[in-house]
Length: 308
Image 1: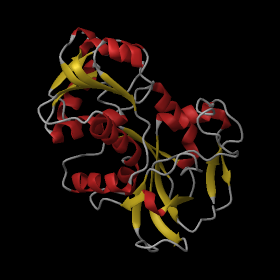
Image 2 (image 1 turned 180 degrees about the vertical axis):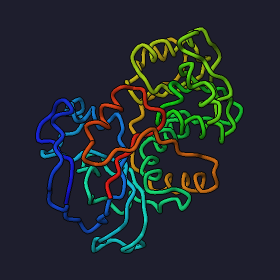
Image 3 (image 1 turned 45 degrees about the vertical axis):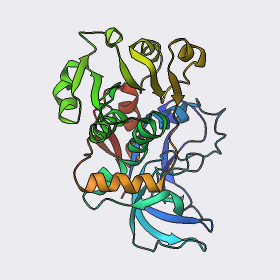
Image 4 (image 1 turned 120 degrees about the horizontal axis):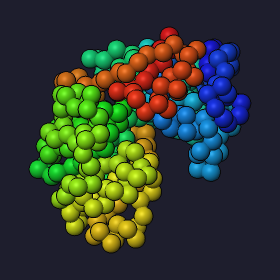
């Protein structure tokens, strides 16, 4: 098969497009023919070696843990799936990924592809939408009527978070640049802070803050929460002592596979409650260019690789 792999950690030039063996499957796996895979910031962070201490990857490494494709083989212990099924998944990130024509995925991690989406759109959903779902609903326990601040609402995770928070019935605030104000309003934001003109740190009395940026943004987010509020970050581990000083609860969320949650998202996607926004589509061979786009921080929505 054709695949993009790396044999060492480093800059974008470590990504090599060429031939690779089709992966074998375990008894609880399915083999997917990959139609499209999405690019996420975690991909280039892993490529650079930032997550070596957390996950010891084997080389050569195929990146990509956002996939939409067709089942072409099922493991001996798999039931409920058959060859030809159209599915999507956020697979186990410790395994080889989907920048390839085929990928092995646990059957427990796949869900039926939304019929309303094409392959590219479906591939853009799992990792980012599950991240938003788990951060807002599992960790923050966001409720109807609560006031939530979602940082970087025009980004891949942010756009899903805006729509899910709006669906839950929350009062949705977000930060973005001037050019994206109307865009985020069209995708669920009730109130927008233009970070080029105003400082979100002047805001107060939020029930929930969803930090998608880390660093200084996280550091300035504590003060906007009311006592008893909840902060969830997907970038940095919040300091427990600082959380205690502000009388709030804080969590770090690292997204996990969930077929059950994907099924719930499928219903929202098929009914148009949640929409997919694709920034750009690149051919698989141009994965390095896709990484460059992701690293720029300028993407509006998701970046996708067209595989087959």
